[in-house]
Length: 244
Image (cartoon, rainbow, N blue to C red; front, side, top):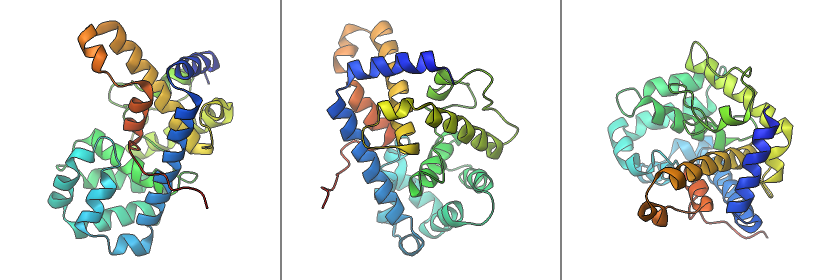
């Protein structure tokens, strides 16, 4: 774990977002976990309609604008089966992850398929299944938030998607063990805290690059860090229910 880099990203994130804003994002992450956990239960998933899938997939950043098209191309029954196999199937989750991505071949590109599989599996049970998205680590380019905060000798690449998924999980456990995510995540802990921390790393990097390289006109319409983070996590405008 590259603690020095992690601390620097943490400092920049807390300059660009208030603790109140970060706590709000943490609460929305928990709301997303609750939503996915409920909707992807075996009972609810077994009767999920086209509109139900569309609404759920609108909370997946890279899929949200293609959600209706994806559902109609795949078909509700086939999608229900693929998601059920991913979330509730037998065998190693990494193998189920790879099988789901393969089932989306010809429907969406592999990056989006990885994002979709990662979000469905992760938010159905965040402590059992970790998140892998291309903003976290793009196995084709080697870029992403995760490589920026882990040491070079932490392996991410592998011979198959299943192996890469397992390696991402091992790296995320290192991030969780470092404690940095707890310093930024408010009420969210564990892997949800990791989600917020790494989304902030991604947001700080993008924010810095945009500010340095793009025109003043573009920078004036660039969203602030909290909005960038909410968007990549798929929690923008997600309703948070008050505690009883």
